[in-house]
Amino acid sequence: MSPAVAHNLDHTFHALADPTRRALIVQLKAGGRRVTDLADAHTMSLNAVSKHIKVLERAGLVERHVQGREHRIQIADDPLGEAETWLTDTREFWETRLDRLAHMIGASEFAAPQNRAVREEKR
Image (cartoon, rainbow, N blue to C red; front, side):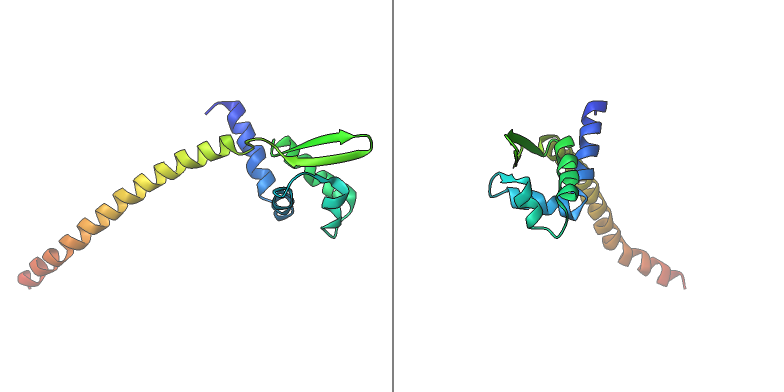
C-alpha cells in the first residue's frame, strides 16, 4: 500500500469513527444541505458542526459548495473507493484464514474420538 493510500485511509476511518460525523453522512444521503440545516438537526453549535464537516472534507467524504454566504455540503463522488478496496482485500485475507482454521478444527474433531480410544486402550 502506498503512503498516500495509507494516509487517505487514516483520514477516512478517523472521520467515520465519530458518531456525529456518521450521522451527518446519513443526513447527506438525501442530498446536499446547508451547514446551518445540518447544525439545526444536532444540538450543537454551528462552529462544532463546521469542525466535523472539515474532518469529513479532509477525508474526501464530503464536498463544500459556496454560493454567496451559503455553504452547501454534499457527499463526494465515490468517497469510499480506497476504503472499500482495503476492506475487501482484508476480508478476503481473514476469510481464507478462518476457512483454514475451520478446516483444522474440523479435522481435530474428527481425530479426537480416535485419540480418546487409543488413550482408553492404554489404561
